[in-house]
Amino acid sequence: MRKTFAALIALAAPTVEADASFRYVLGGADCAPEVGVLHVSGSRLRLEGANGIAIYDGLEQMLVGLDASNRTFMQIEVDDDAQDFQRDVASASMTRVDRELERANAMLAQQRAEADARCRKDRSQCAAASMLQGIDLDAMMNMDVGALAAQQEQMIGQLDEKTLRQAGIDPAQMRAQLDDAKTQAAKARSKEERGPVEVVDTGRSETHDRIACRVRELRAGDALVESRCEAGFDALGLDERDRRGVERGYKRLTSYAESFQPIVDRFGVAAGAPRPEGLVVRQVCYGDDGRERGRATLAIAREPLAEALFEIPADYRPMMGAGAPEPEG
Figure 1 (cartoon, one colour):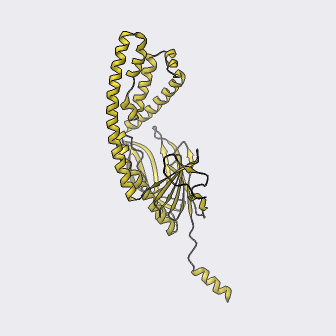
Figure 2 (cartoon, rainbow, N blue to C red):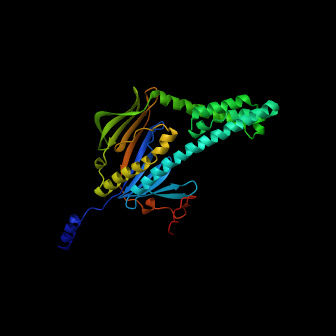
Figure 3 (cartoon, rainbow, N blue to C red):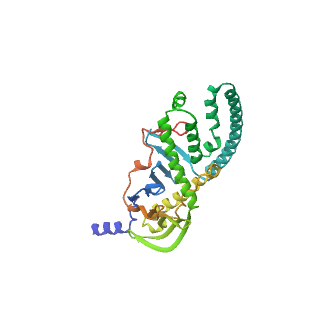
């Protein structure tokens, strides 16, 4: 009787809340999503990608960035007030950048005039004058790779190797950097020529690993850039605690990223691929020739996760100027 009673209690008790890990299996050339690994434990998320590791606490609305290269961390509040403040700071900072750039251009114009005057009197001063003429502060500030590459090429063409070495510049290294900049500029021009990336809802549905998802295509004009099959968070088979955690965390972090929009607008940074509406279950990337060059497929493991995954390692220290408290222990 006691065994039967115990069994009935076990059946009536709520199931143990399971955590979940999302990982992408990659194939072909680089087609990795921005976040390659996502761990979910209720309101806590751990995101691992090419740009590092981030830990999000949905209850505290706190984001922690971990830098494994020097074992440091930074804590950032991402609640509504923090986002409003960040947006105001970004806007004010870009206004200041424009004022400082205007002042710097005026000073550069004066230095060029003075260098030209010295060059007319003494030909040995003409190399310095030529270097000043090749400086384009607007291209530097706006990170115009093509303009910077042209600027470097002009400088190399006007100065001999001896003069460059005297200025502390390695000609071979400078040419290698120039070739790399040209390659990046060509890729940027190719993207610009294709036009902005738009999302096309195909109306098709697929099933991957028993997860139903909707197929959307990213197109630049007539060119197919990427195909994604996206699933709503309620289709992932998570328990209710984890489903709410990952859905709320995704919305909060997306909203925080948008608070930096004044900086993106000021520097004219090309918009990346439109963000998914849910979680990407399958992603296929295409080259300029229309052929598939790589893909990423989601794999989900439902398993208890170690608490340490969502904590700042004890030997990590705050980043310089981060103003974050020392971790306990």
